[in-house]
Image (cartoon, rainbow, N blue to C red):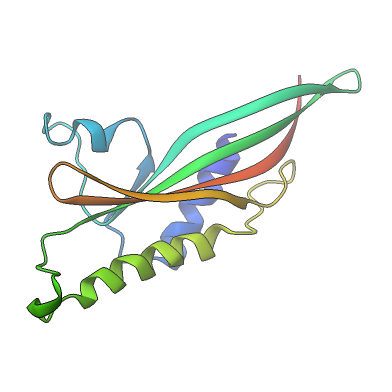
Length: 145
């Protein structure tokens, strides 16, 4: 699984250099408003919420049907209502979310994993004027036990 995380991080850093922060998701967004110890800057990508359902394949291998969730978080400090003249910032945020998807769809992160395939996406806001675009990818992983 570590190769999947590293592969995602490297691909995002390569293709979306304007991101200010790329990391494993360990709750930074949920605690950023309450605790200044998490150095989250925006826009950022956080990778986490992995899940695998394992089954035996032969005597010493297991196959996992797995998923990983990638979050793009952006601040929404721009005035984006229609008459503001800066409503195109909405399009810019959505375009960046599309670029994250395009960077990862079909990415093969390691020799023992299938390419990433998007299975779910959503968008929501959190306190502090932060918009989060969340995409979950599935893949299969084979590991020696």
